[in-house]
Amino acid sequence: MLESTDNQHFETFDNCTLALSTTTANTFKVTLFFEESCQIVCVRSYYLLIQLKEMTDVVLHNPMPIIDDATTRQVIKEQGFKIYLKIDKSYDEMYRYFKNTPFICDFELLQLYKN
Image (cartoon, rainbow, N blue to C red; front, side, top):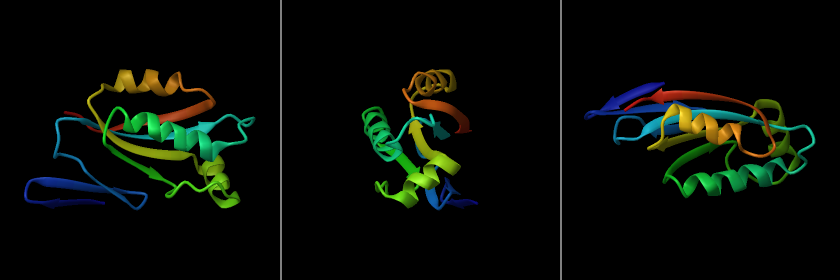
């Protein structure tokens, strides 16, 4: 769902709203799938968010909040852990970053806004 107000464009993804054009950063959505052997997907997801927040201050995720319970684990295992971020990195840089992230078996990286 795309909304516009005063030269700002907002996109809503999975109940997360992100302003797309209010920065010089690129905007990405990544859906991460963890290896089957990874028993602590909530902890891995939380740790990954901490790492990303060191690189940018605009990070949204789904499911939200990350609580280590059976429901959250099941959502992450079945639907993936979705992250939306604005960052001053290229698609290739972000692709390499997620490709080299431990315990990730598959991911889908989409560039939603390119600056």
